[in-house]
Image 1 (cartoon, rainbow, N blue to C red):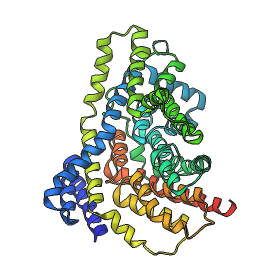
Image 2: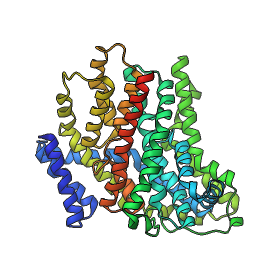
Image 3: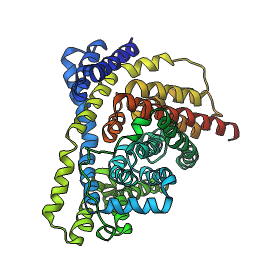
Image 4: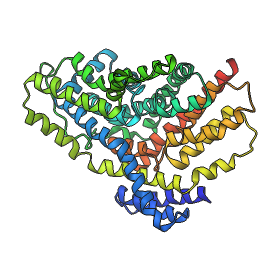
Length: 449
């Protein structure tokens, strides 16, 4: 019944948005209340569940999205995004620009949360699309696919790191084999599949690129833009800070030395929110003060970036509310009971449970961590299993079937200006291909290692 009630909720949501043209945020909140009642959440707890889901999601990404949007807008308004875009176009060429996007997204996404990397890269992606006169969807899907893969099954991302630790898998091996799996998986799901969709849905890929979420973009002559080096450094400065913090944490765990003032400081500046704030301050200097741009102009850019984010943040928060309803309503516990006592390969079991939990609950991280608790008892009965591959299977399964209960679904939809149908046909299928193809490569590796 919990799975049936979840399906009913999704169906009602689609009817409200696509049939009655109701505002997406309002529709998400209505469905959250309806599904709460269906799942038997006490009436007195429903409002708390909805509020905690909305607040928890926005509490996690609100600061990052706000500061990240300001950072991206400053780089764009200073001409830095245009300089990066033109350099990538010139070096890779128009025909290979999707591979350039994959490369850039992989570098940024290896340490940054999905949402952080997305909001930093989207102004650059949009500028490239505008220069080449192509739809942002053509470049946004390779970016989204790459970020999904790096976030879901590569350490040091929290889900991948935590599940590897839970299983007792070697973290370095998980990262190395994860990269080996991620490269062909992203090529298939993020580059080749969108090319097929473009043939089936040409109108989607032929629309003029508009990006209301980051506002109107200025155009510059080349001599009016900052240098490529300083533009890239400013854009990836949060990546540098977070990577530094991650490396120090890994070294500390391996060597075993205790915390001290320096370690605590590095951990502080390596936190995603702190890193974004410091990067924004750097951008104010490199993109503004150093180029003698008045502070009032810089703050005007920051203000415009926030004005464009309002409804997007509410929609993402609404998705978080729906996700929390499913979790508090016991959907995850019900799925756990379905797999109790089942005899199946740990690799396949980990992938299957993670995939079902992801589709049902919407959160890849929750799906990953919940799967570990179900699979660990089976691992003790299968001593010769490859723990690295089980870890990767869990992360890969957590990519499956992104849809309306996943914040990333709404991020992709709203930023790329797609309809519900288009988002299902592109990002939802793309995420499922990532899960299935990733499992295929894991099973191949399982034969040889």
